[in-house]
Length: 157
Image 1 (tube, one colour):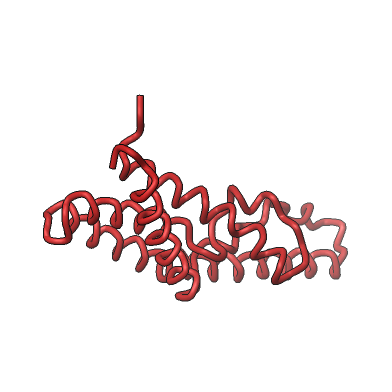
Image 2: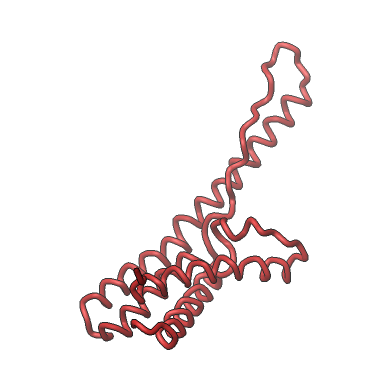
């Protein structure tokens, strides 16, 4: 069974955006991190690339004045706003909480009171959740590129 063109475009948008994070991170930091393929945050936004690939595909197949395209545009705006707003700020909160936990543990170690319980040991909260506006912008560019390219190549679009 063949995937519909819009679903294929969306999946390719996500995969390509996730994969591109690896060489971009390597170029900017000199560190090769393969786990970026499965992580949130970073350049470009794969959430944005996915929804914009889908929106582009729907626009190309149903027209820019269709109800389906209008729905996709609205959902795209919500996803991009969420990536730069709520999810980004949740990452900031995780940063603060991780720092507080580290400072608390340092305080307990400094006091070295034998009556104090063992220091708090929890897994650090993930800090890279959301995106900077530039990461969302390049996710949108990636999505448009993937949507158009898939339209040109996919025989059932």
